[in-house]
Length: 206
Image (cartoon, rainbow, N blue to C red; front, side, top):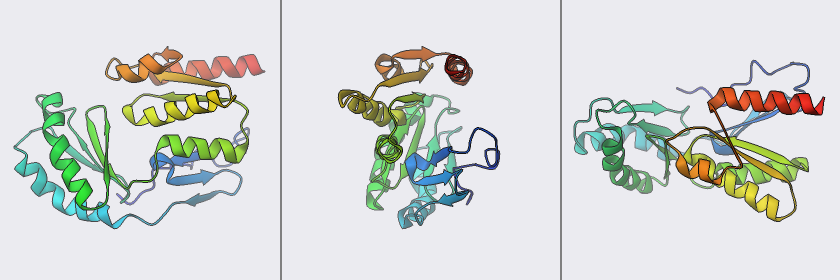
């Protein structure tokens, strides 16, 4: 808790990564290799309020062993149901009470693969991607994702393509996110598949 989502230590000073920019928390955090600076807005007060009320809300929704809470550096709170006895049933049972809790404190709920993340509104991966492309003047884009939170970024790439910017949509393969796979141009076998694709592209460029 309290640590930024952007973990940049392994990238600083690495040859070939001088222009790397790392975005975290749906684009709210940013680390730039050129300056070495990590920037982020002040934590939303609703996150602390939600964290304080969450145990009561979860208890009221019923005893569900295996449900866990992850704090994301004071910028979001995620409720995971993957380890529950019935992950899908727990996920669906918690959607409404968590949405009500989030709305009461000015937050939104971002659903993912057996996870419901309560976070501030106003930024998503699509917004962050469009801003970064416009800032850098990128002439082509490759976006790889593996969760429902990546759908706004997929939509952003589709918009860029409509505006004449070539873009490739990659799904880091998972049977749990069929909607993402259906919209992707290419489905690869998880993170290792993404690494293999990037290595192949680097070889072609070289």
